[in-house]
Image (cartoon, rainbow, N blue to C red; front, top):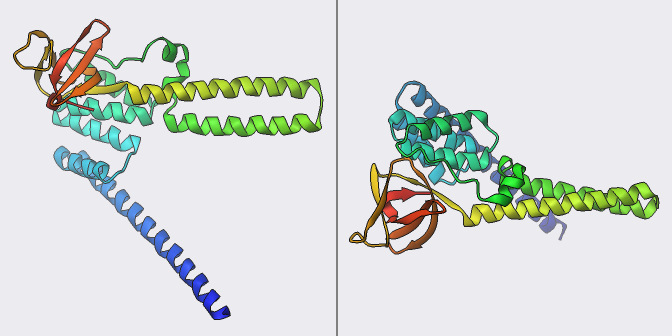
Length: 253
């Protein structure tokens, strides 16, 4: 019986060691690929660098700097639409990166339409910190504030003083505000899809048919809000009073 328990323990430890080794090997492989891509970039072999960055993203790597580097690479290749698309993806993970913001503004200025991403309405504008914190950071702050609140609640049970009661009320108010902010961030990301025009030029139609009236034109790199998908068409808008239908193959998001 003792021998069997030792064997099970040995098997568990061996499995853990193998898993750890596999993770380390995978991380080393990713690091080596990123290093290689950066070398290609500095050697001005931008297409090779882009291919490696794209491959890593297809494998499930969702790193803000990876999207940022891919955006820079596409700018060097003259593919403004893909550059802006990846800058926007990077911005979701790196909302306070000044270099990223500067490069995105520069890329937008190179487009014909020069459309900037929507800020999402009145409430996100009032809660100014919502756009400055990514979703993962929102949840981390929420967990931290929740722990602080319950610690204060426990403390108030032992120290029945007015100071603890005031701290409890303040921490509860801050926690509720954090809950609200996280909810707004999650809703904005899930309901407000941002897309980028990838074609050189696309006609925005009054309905999802090529025979319908052309309302206006958009060009490569234009940032639009994606409202609704229907078959091979998508309803987009660039402002509250300017919207229409375009082929879904003309955008990416």
